[in-house]
Amino acid sequence: MTETCLFCRIAAGDLPAHKVYEDEHILAFLDLHPIRPGHTLVIPKEHQVWFEDLPEELATAITSCSQRLARGMKRLYGVERVAMFYTGIHVPHAHAHVVPMHHVHDVSSQAYLAEGVEGYAVPPQLPADKMAAIAGELGAQLGAQ
Image (cartoon, rainbow, N blue to C red; front, side, top):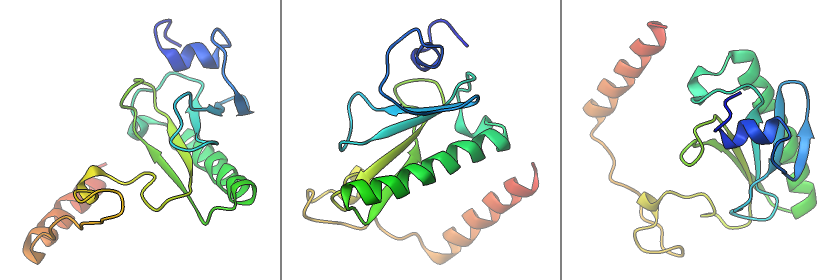
C-alpha cells in the first residue's frame, strides 16, 4: 500500500466506496464517475501500477470477478454486452473497468467517432505487409518473455 494512492486507501478502508465484492486479494466498487450506472472498478488490494505487471494469478482473479459481474449486469440491466478494460489513466493503480453497455459506443475510442456518436468511421486499415511486420514483432516479444 502507498499512503498517497487513492485506490490503496480505498482498499485499506481509509476512504469510503460503494463495494460490490471483496475478498483477500481484490476489491470491486462502483466508479464515482460512471459511464453507465453499474460501472464497476475491480482492483488488486496490493499496490500494482501497471496491469501488465500483475502476477498472473491476481490478473486471473480480477478477470474472473469481472466475468461474474458482467453476467450479473446482463441480468440486472438487460444489456447484450458488457465491456471490461484496463486503463489506469487517472489513478496509478491497476484497475479494470466493467461497464454495462446500453449503447454500442459507450466505450468507443474517439478514433471511431470522428462523425459523432451516431456516425461510425473505421480508422484506415494498415497495408498487409505492415500488419505482417507488426504481428511478427509482437509475436517475437511474447517469445522473449
